[in-house]
Image (cartoon, rainbow, N blue to C red; front, side, top):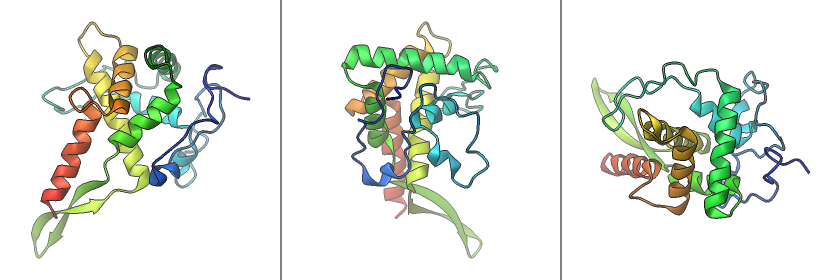
Length: 201
């Protein structure tokens, strides 16, 4: 049996949200690094292990714009540094396991289910006038938005602060999995997206 990081089982993970089940992969790998094998195929990211997709979302140069009143710039310290981020995510998962006594991959899935928005807004032009209308969000975009918000929260929590990235990532995953509205940035962004969609109906 192949275990993630030789520690965590993947065949026991349960996805309760039926719509997300089709967009989340648990391909058996010890090291979450597929070397971009799926990027050339259509919807190839759906075949990439969900932990690797989390790592890929962390490989960014910052927001480049204000997010919650902050501009996050990692100055290239994370861009392309996949092996470094694999170690960071492994340490974050160890922290999650230590705090919750559960499989951290299952905790991550619970966090994705709690933070994936079901509705969003898009802009259309009708008669030369632009309107915002509510639309349903596809399963793949729901997963992408949830991963993006979780990783953004981790980056903002560790930027210019004493906390390490693995600590802030572990905390965000735990808070989001528990449905902690006060402390989870990803849940706040989900609620904001769905609130805008309700007002645009």
